[in-house]
Amino acid sequence: MAYVKSILPKEIFWQDIRSKVKQMIKKVLEYSLNKELEAILKVEKYQHTELRVGYLNGYYRRSLITHLIGRIDNFLVPRTRKKVKFRLLEKYKRRLDEFDYAILNCFLNGQSTRKTAKFFYNFFSESVISCQTVSNILKRIDSLVNLFLKQTIKDDYLFLIVDAKYIKISPQNKRKKPVIFAIGIKEDLSYEILYFKIASSENETNYTNFFFDLKEKGLKGKNLEMLICDGKKAPESAFLFVYPNKDIQICSIHYVREA
Image 1 (cartoon, rainbow, N blue to C red):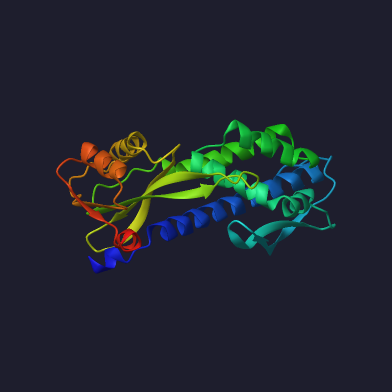
Image 2: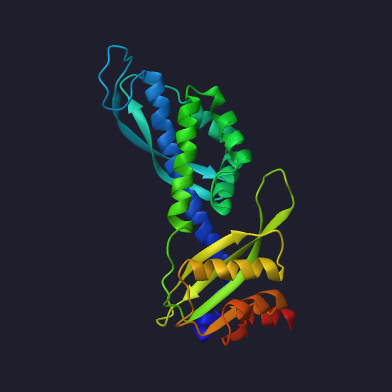
């Protein structure tokens, strides 16, 4: 159990989220640049037409520094025989905070909301990308998010760490929202993020709904022995309601902080 106690839940959660969001931003940027180039060249990939005004000539790699998720390395930028200027890259560098937070919001909410959709339509409005392409980009974002949020959880975890991290989900708004998350630990002490969910607050109802979500996704609790949490009444009561007759242990880090 010493190894289990040494886990820093909030740090693990945020590192995992940043890694996934970074991959999403990279994929969205690469897809969007290809679509912008198609509009510039007036031809879709592999299409033959006399309207073509240029030719793709491979790709080159570049990096970008962002404030929210750090450095994005080796994303592919399409190259043409004649040099073209991508408005998207210039605009991204000017509004990278808003763009990255929009992707983060999509990820935390499980899909693009009306507010984030409006942002992306406005973001691409200065480029040659059509509204239909923006719609396809939003669908692509949703599908990337759903790959994680809709995956089935195997019922082979012995320990469950549940905590909440307060995250600012808008660069303009100083108010942070709690994101409840669960880390599953197996018999070999390997661990992974199982699920997360934005909540209005850390009350017992929200924690109960969270545990029911875990159960519905496959964590029936057959092998589950213990919940490790911060010692608050809400997660403990909710856990025992959904998974009765299980043990609860206060996370050693929270125990030391409260001592």
